[in-house]
Image 1 (cartoon, rainbow, N blue to C red):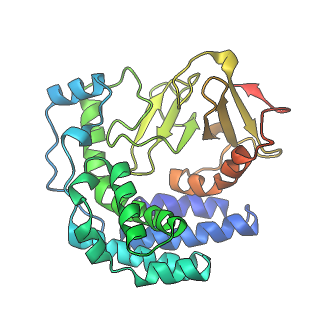
Image 2: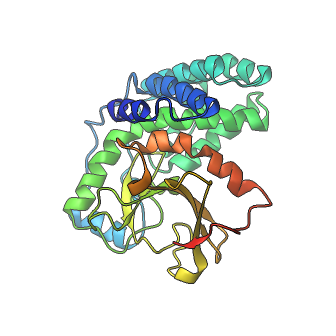
Image 3: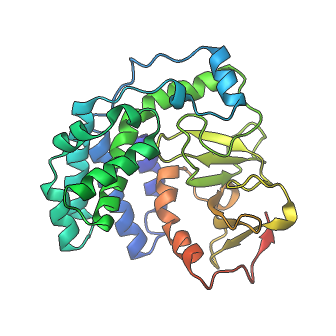
Length: 299
């Protein structure tokens, strides 16, 4: 996790956000620092051959599914311990969740978890981890919260191998077709960016995987969920007065993607920071009353 880029983006936002957004960013900055303290260097990861990379990319299969990253149990457990303590102290959760996060013996939970799966299919691993936490006494909601915290700790283990794989995919010429899921770990994109630095001189769209930190390009006029390129079915919506942050929606699948428009956004840029800033768009998209309306435009 690039804390320097995060801090530069935070500095650009200083004084421009409401109290709630500023408080959330302050909390997440503490959390990012907690999980980054012992980030795994990933020096032991062997990048697969170009032939294998091309074959898996063409088949739409994430690289880690075939060549998993090794997860260090001790450093992962320690990162989890720090992240859970940070979340309990600064997250503003209700008392039961704070108590639940504090009583977990993370080294024991990690030892009981299918750790080999963590470097192969992170999403499946986190689901399994949530199940273990529920079996250990957490409520379903508490287990989901703990799994979200764990996802950040896991990212500290995945980032370096993911960077190596992403670089190797570029060098192997793995560009088309553009995938909808992360080509490294298979995660669904959490956010997108239109414009900015990409191979189409700012005209394309970049997707971001929050689980391993990978970014990859996709056609601008394309749903990031179902892949349709029917422009008449694609729209965007934004909160009045904020053209930089928009909800890109699809009539065909009903999905949406929170999207930053680089021409209207602040610089420097950080997907981590924008992920927190755009949390309010999730609330809007989840509102049953949200069904397009005024302000809609073709994507």
